[in-house]
Image 1: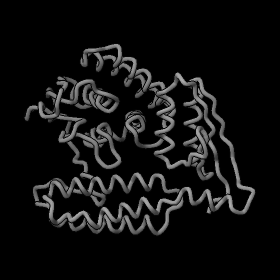
Image 2: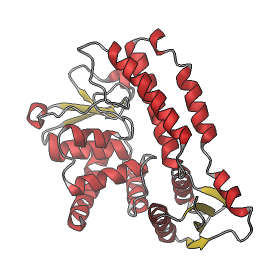
Image 3: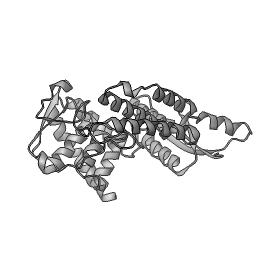
Image 4: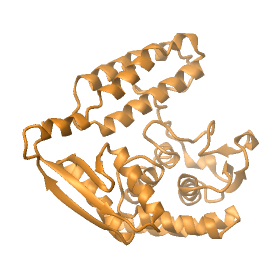
Amino acid sequence: MENAWVTLIASLPTSQSGARMRLWRAVKAVGAVALRDGAYLLPDTPPCRKTFSVLAEDVRKCEGEAWLVKVEPLDAGGAPAWWASFDRSSEYSALIEEARSAKLDELTLAQAARKMQTLWRRHSQVVQTDHFPGEPQRVSAELLEKLQETLSRRQSPDGPPVGPRGEARIERLDAAAFRGRIWATRARPWVDGLAGAWLIRRCIDQDARFRWLARPGDCRPAWIGFDFDGARFNHAVGRVTFGALLASFGLDGDPGLRRVGELVLFLEGGGSPVREASGIEAALTGLRDHLADDDTLLDAACAVFDGLRKAFGASA
């Protein structure tokens, strides 16, 4: 058990509602305990210190104040109470109960595959907040592995290959087969959609044309959909659309693109905090508020991502 802990104490101006929401979302994602409003606790480990350091820097960039403090309970009952705050047994128990009652054999293959992806996604979210892993984590993982194995045996030979945790295995694709195509995503794209369109234009299909969909059902069969339910390229377990495109076209070896992917993942609500996130979020928000035409918005966003890729690549 940990005897030392690190606390982030943060204060933001009332005008910084976006930064406040970003901080709340980040501390929740990493499983930090709120001691009170603006004071968050994690075990004192190098990864936890790094997480809090990035968040503190983000708070300061948004005209707030932030302090990192190493703390240790002085009374005998303090440490067990803090350990109990990080107990994830109830979350694992709920996940195990849901998995045992899933009845995958009564679902179609597509329904069962989606259910397994949901279960693995929930498991990953709990694991990310579990700083003292033990038997509950092992039991839940073993149960999901068994369910996944059973589902895999049911899948037809022509179905998409599935990895051990239910994520679709990434099929490596040749960009040459995707040149001069029409790519479709949701209208008024946000971070993942904009970054995905930038990646397509810069690295996959330089002659790409884009269609902005009012509804996913408007996507025509000849178009290549991305970043919406049912699209060819979309979110997967632990991966946003940008990450799926990176892996599918073998672009994940580029350090600049990888770093952009980490930023996109964080801004879409997952992954570890990224120092540059607040500035990029503010820039993209301003562009989307100012530019009503989605083609014009993409052109402007491409300049932002071009700069990021160069800066990230230079610092790798």
